[in-house]
Length: 165
Ligand SMILES: [Zn+2]
Image 1 (tube, rainbow, N blue to C red):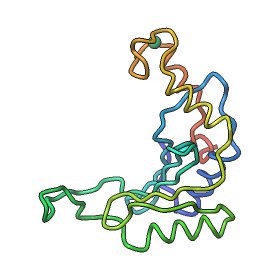
Image 2 (cartoon, protein in one colour):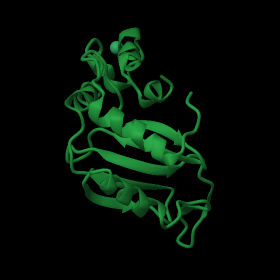
Image 3 (tube, rainbow, N blue to C red):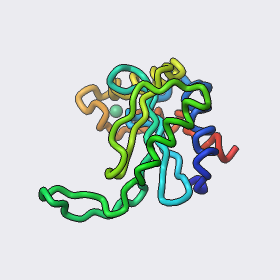
Image 4 (cartoon, rainbow, N blue to C red):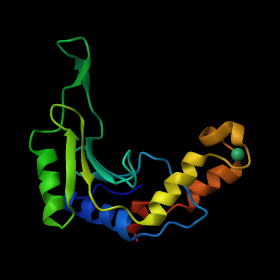
């Protein structure tokens, strides 16, 4: 478990992981990406490949509190502030990572920034291996709980290993 980092440090660690860290070719990891806890009840998540095959950085509230909204849907009482998603996008642009688009954000509990530059190919490959599911028990797919399926996740290098190194 990592200590909560200031946002800028979490961003540096996550981008390093996304673009420069090579996953072993016998590792896999789930498609929601890896989260880094950030000071102030926030996290950053780094998703190597989304719908278009390109990476996404997500900012979110770690522990959202929910109440019923005006249309009967659940809305967070402690959402992202209006500035957080645009500020993250601007910070990424400033660091030289072109932003494709942003979505969600205030008044929601998470916001996403789509990046234009593809992630390290080994990161994308590790997600592909996850999507292919357990090769020994194809019927159980990604829901397998056997030792060899679990071992693939343990071989994956996660960003917290980099921030505590
Ligand atoms: Zn299995």
